[in-house]
Image 1: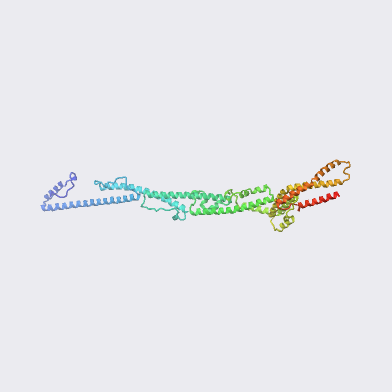
Image 2: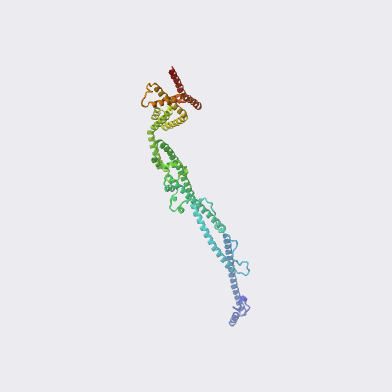
Length: 488
């Protein structure tokens, strides 16, 4: 029974040999006196035990192989999942899957190494996604105004945990940059709005801090860029605040401009000295400037409106007491012009009539002044057109005076008597006779000029209310009668 089936692989025969043992066992059994059949039976049992041991070892080895296959398959599946998640189309390290000589342990080691690398890459990628997602959520909350973070205005991107590819990361980065740009644009817009509110508040004399705090308290914080709410509610609130401030500016501007116009008119009527008007130089500047160019702080405050209103009321009170005198002065000016030019002044504004109208409150004194000023303009214009004729009338009247003096001189019986100044009278008489001899020519020229003037103007030439041609005709008749009386 030395041919026992319990043997070892040939590669290990040099290390372990069962033959000496089997011989020793057989000798022991012989010494004991075991029969051949008994020896065969015990050798058969020994062979069965060896087979059981081999079978158990084969089963264990098969189980180990199956587990290794399972581990390799699981790691390859995880590897494929990670590659798909990371968007890796190929890997740099070579896996010896196609080598027939590669053992399962070699394959497992190679896959494990690659898997460890991809897991590290996945963890790093997850950190990148987490950081970007955190920034996106924070910016989305800021843009939405911290009131409803889920309803930010920017288009959200879907967060897929199984997609960790560079393409998806680029989408997140692009979305983050878009939000950062929107935040920067909103901050710039809000800063522009706040600056405009500040400028308007300065012009109107309104508390800037209170105005912006009513929109949102963060707008008046010390660290504006870090603390300011940039949501739509803040933008809309600032737009509404600016709209209201502009409306107030327009209302106040129109009110002050109206006051400025009234003051200018009253100053002109009251002859207000420059020293009193200089106090309202800003108001004068405002009247000549467009509303949108009013940027000087404090120019449209309620205090300015109150001061202008008080000045207007004060001047109106003074105007009421002095207007009657101003009207009378204007009427006197008109009468003086008319008297100098022998024109009959307009009877509608006689001192008696205007006094009664002002006292009864039936007519605004400023309207009366305007009416009289227009009459003054008309009288000056008429005086200019009558100047040539008036000069001729002056020469005629001067000649008439010389004629009267000459008549008196001729009637003086002592005109030739020697005496002091007699020779001067003789010389004057000679000049008077020359002048008087020209009276007919003066009259004829004056009549011709007057007729031409009346034809040109289409009205009669009045002298102290009487037609000049009638006066001249009357004078010619009177002169004719006197000459006839002298001849008789």
